[in-house]
Image (cartoon, rainbow, N blue to C red; front, side, top):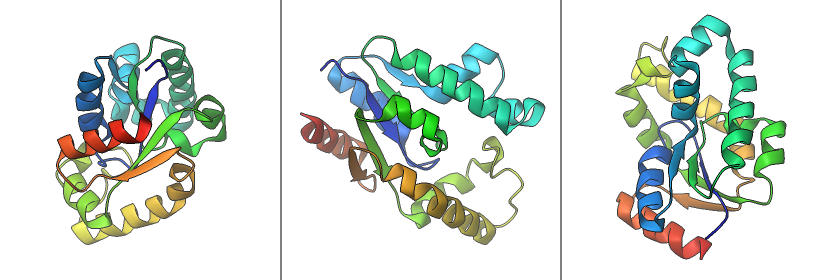
Length: 170
């Protein structure tokens, strides 16, 4: 394989976990775009959002996406909002992009454990409100995620998802 593999999906859909195992199986590097941004800026995504705003973050995210996309073949886990901007699709279009789908219930359960780390979810108090916000955001983002070249449900064991991805892209 010589072409980047881009994993996309809602926050908590398993992009980083699946990406690490996929990269290991394909014997290539793994890049988590949010971690790349964090290491470049020296601030967590939450702090970038809080201190500099979402617009600054989205511009930075786009620049970092272009940078990692120009590097050596790798598996790249995108941030949940990365595919939701047309300029990012100019980088992703025609590439091996995979939408990791996940049910609203699974997303709510996963994200309820880590919502303080997620800028868009940090102020949510109840699990019901979290569910409603995830549903609203997912409905807005789904049309962008659906542009991916492939899609797969991430509701089984990670090694099974990795195997399915390898079969899909081979």
